[in-house]
Each structure stands twice: as C-alpha cells, then as structure tokens.
Length: 147
Length: 147
Image 1 (spheres, chains in turn brown, green):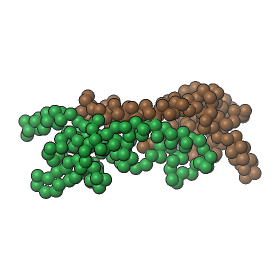
Image 2: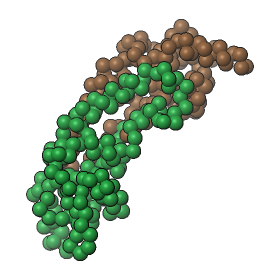
Image 3: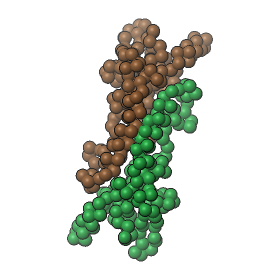
Image 4: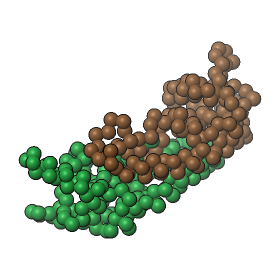
C-alpha cells in the first residue's frame, strides 16, 4: 500500500520550501537535495503552483517559495489534492464491475479506515515536517565546495 | 492510494467463503461470482491456505471453506498478511536513498496515519463484511438455469 510518487514528491517539495522561506529555491537544487529526477519534480512543482501551495518567479534569479504559512498547510489536504484517487479496493472504482457493489459492507469498512488515516493527517501541518534549516545550509555549503 | 489486487481478492474470497460455510466452494465459482480471473484467484487461494485462513480439499467434489470462524478473522490482520509492504512513501522503503531519512518527521506522521487506518480495520472482523447468503444462492440458481 502506498501513496503515488506524485504525493511523495509533493510533500518533499513543501518540506524543503517550508524550511527556507527567506530565499527562492530552484527545481535543480531540490532535485539534488533529494537525489531525484528534475523532470518528475517539474510536474509536481507546476501542480503545487496551480493548487496555490507555492509561488514561482520566472527568469534569471527566479525560483519558488511557499505561497502560504506552513502552519496553514494541512497534510491531509495536501494528500487529498495530490492523490489521483482513493480507490483502495476495486469496489471504490467508478467503473467497478463488482456484482455485489450495491450491497457490500467492505466499502463501508474501508471508507472508515481511510477516515481513520485522514483523522491523523488532518491534525498535522507542514510546520510539523519541515526540514531543519541547518540540513539545507550544510547541503548548500557542500555544493559550493564541490563546484 | 490503493491496496494491492492481492489484498483486494483475498478479502473477496474470505467474504464469499464466510457466507456459506455449509458446503465447499470452488475457485471457478468464486471467479464467476465476482467476474474476475481464475488464474489470479489461484495464487490468492494458495496463499490464504498457507496463512491458515482457508482449508482446501482436493479431488472430485473438492473445494475450499473457511478454516476459522469469521468472528475471529480480524480485517487489519488480513491486510497486514496480504499486503507486500506499507512503504506508503519512499522513506519507508528499506533501500531508500533519501538523504534526510535519519532526521525526517514525515515518516513519523505517516506511521501515525497508518496506525489510524489500522485502528479501524482491527475493530472489524470478517463477520462484518460477509456476503449475504441469498446473494450467493441467487447467483448459483442463475448459473443452473443458464447451464
């Protein structure tokens, strides 16, 4: 059982941006920090912009930053916004062919289980998971030394 | 976000067997009932046997039945037994390359979220989701008429 890579990377981008609001970050920098693909991050960043979580400033010296205070970004909301669906079993699927769908108690139990998960995620904000600024400072220092 | 097909089908087999403990069921019958592949079900049934959830009787007139009272089969346990892992984000993966893994609060939050989900699943047993016997009786009657 897992979230999509899209949700995973969305959380990582927000965790990174949350820890350094004083200056703009770039996709290249975040990709290097996590050791993940810039191409994947590009789509994630675009979507986070559309969803109003981040602001991007184009051009030389451009980059991105959080659009909102980390305390106001609820993790359950981020996951709801970034996961494609919560069809945790076939019966949740809109086009499900299951013949007992109309009279199946499994769907009710699984919906409650999802609600149990979100009741935890909705109690946490980005503030709880932002990366400690010194981790990023050390990383950037190493990049400067290496270059 | 979804469970594996393996977990999904495992739950369906148990839900079916739970509703008709008086006689043996076959893989072909369950596959037809749900409109799913016999091949997929074969692996699921083998695994459920190994895990001690069902008993299979080989030979002519053979088939399978639940090995235990549905009231004693806890849904959270079934999911734990049938899901390959609960690496809901990259950081849960044993071979994760994430550089902040050692100092990342996301993992803690996601673990709590999983616990929230299981706290619900652990409150339910197979008894709560077994298929109403009359649905299966109607299905079998239709099969007899059609054949």
